[in-house]
Image 1 (cartoon, helix red, strand yellow):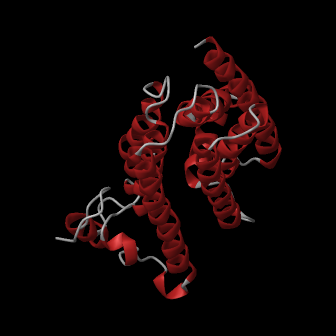
Image 2 (tube, rainbow, N blue to C red; image 1 turned 60 degrees about the vertical axis):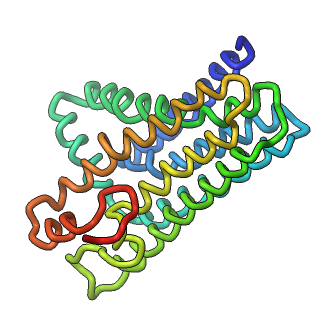
Length: 262
């Protein structure tokens, strides 16, 4: 347990340095939505830092390292390309305008706390399967560990394909002002959010059976709660509330778990 706590402290320090550097860049660019770009890459950074600290990887560690790397690089690349050359995201812009009313010092510390420190805490908790797999005694893979890898693959499919379908829809000028309702979006209003939560449930199963694996249960619980109840679905859907086309789509389509349209 002491080794695990040492690793938590080490990862916390790495995250603090990484996110502080991000905040400095964001301050000069006047764009706090940069945090969305570095979110995925932060997990990749954590995974590879731990991988180099514990050489001679076993099968389970290689699975976790590969999954986190593929997911994190894809997510970071996608958001970077999506946001390149665009102004600050509307959510961060609204906070900027509100917080600046109380002065730059208030804006700085509010951004530090509500955006960067909070995000760092979320990343640390969600990355618990990575921390556990590199700091505890290993055991042979069981059938439920392989099942976890399969669940991760399903989640990756939903997130990556859902993102691709949405980006293609948006790039088509004929869809301006319309709501995406086809492809995977026909079965869930948020296939990308469902995919992300599913991936972390899968990674939890990959490490299930290891010492301290019960601690890692906080990872999928946290990301699922945030996406469904806090910053994911509620915040995004509030933008469309009241639109007739949105309300009709909402009435016939599952919010999170994929299912056939009503």
